[in-house]
Image (cartoon, rainbow over all chains, first blue to last red; front, side):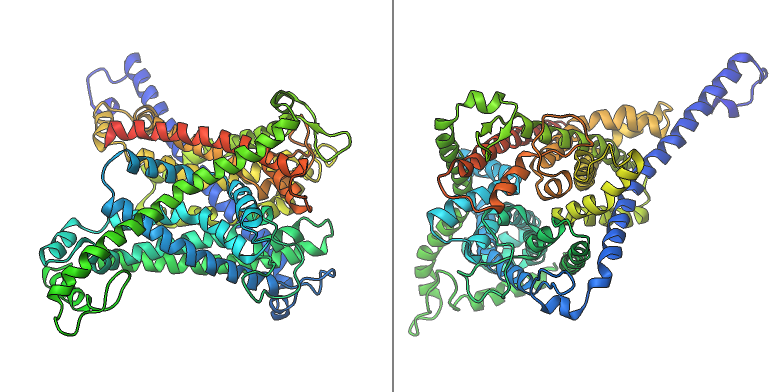
Length: 301
Length: 333
């Protein structure tokens, strides 16, 4: 700035030093932007590398038979049919348990709970549960559902474990959606003589539905990708048939991927990569639905 | 929502009140709505409240369940192995004969992964958060942020596969196959770093955005460049939020399982060499779970003792992070 101001002694040493100093600061400024941009681009490049690596390895193995066949000792014949069905069963049951409980818990915390120590404690507790490593939920499921309740290595045990795992995420997402509902809507409902439950049931929940659905889909897509807790409770490595009922043994897509990826033979890598493509396609679809819902919901409000 | 629609919705809702819902009753045919609404109201209001409370309490029960399960099974383990041996032993071979129950190699493996992932993700995450919050044009941001979020949504087993098939071969080519084993801590640390990168970047961005505009304007008013404003005003002001994100990310890295299990292997070793295969606490739990472990055996109990250690470490870090978050909220909100 000082360099642009014209004065009589334009070439004094002090002035030149000041100009050089300023130029240096501006240069550092530009370098810093480049550095920040580079850091951001690294993230995107890594995503690209990851997708490239998986598509390169797995695209050749994808076929309708791959979706229809059971796993096999021979990599060329192996398929993901039982794992696909297992994932479908588990995520459905997980949703049936975690969504009603999670939404009701969020309703309690946002609409009913008095501001006291107990409420603060429950809230802190939920935040901490969200940070507990998923494998610890696996240990809980192993001790409580598999052994204590005698559910064995069944779909029910797996789904209940995952339901507890995603519960904090469902609660937190629903709370955010409920908080976005304007206070005036509740007041208007009360003004018309509705009770608190009627207000929640017919006004607040309806208005928050988009946000809740988005949160629920994102939580369930997390459940679809979970591996460690299901291995801990004993999701079996080799299942040749689709499960028939809730007490059947099961495997899910990520567990199947893990088993193939852990094999030393090169051929199974392609099989694992192909299964990953299917898994990512499912997750991407779910995420897109969530994104569309969120946008529609935001426009409505 | 415009006023008219809102009251219409309200009226529609009132019309639907007779329909049987959770805890409501059929309207009596003799007396339409008014009187029996009041009747059902009392019972179902209290019921709804109680059901919701019980659901919220499930989360507390989960915590109690986790603590009870871990402590009781680990307690049984500690009756046969003293905690001193467990926490100071330098050899972990619980399935061998004679067994060794020193958890230090597992802690060391976990530490190696967490530090490596942190070295990668923490600086890059902060820099990209600075770019997204301070520099990026809205259009660029609208493209980059979903890409980073996508990175966060990828299941961890996929990162493990990526580590084995993509990162390890690159490392072996760079440093030689003799120095980088097929399963190695470096590959595990890098993929875990990639995994926690979006977490660091989005939490740091939140912290940076919470810094009031006036602070930046003050800096510009004094003639500072954008970089000077960012590094000397905005980042220091957001420091507690940044710290919180760092702690949460490291805690996530410590609890990460599948990526580490696949990329870093299954050899509990007391080593700081990232080229070697190691085993983390989480990978050990998976390794034991894969076999058929009889209930009540010492191997069955070890996974709970290791799980308790893991739970305690991550819980402490999460509480610390919450304390930092509370501090930055207190300053700017």
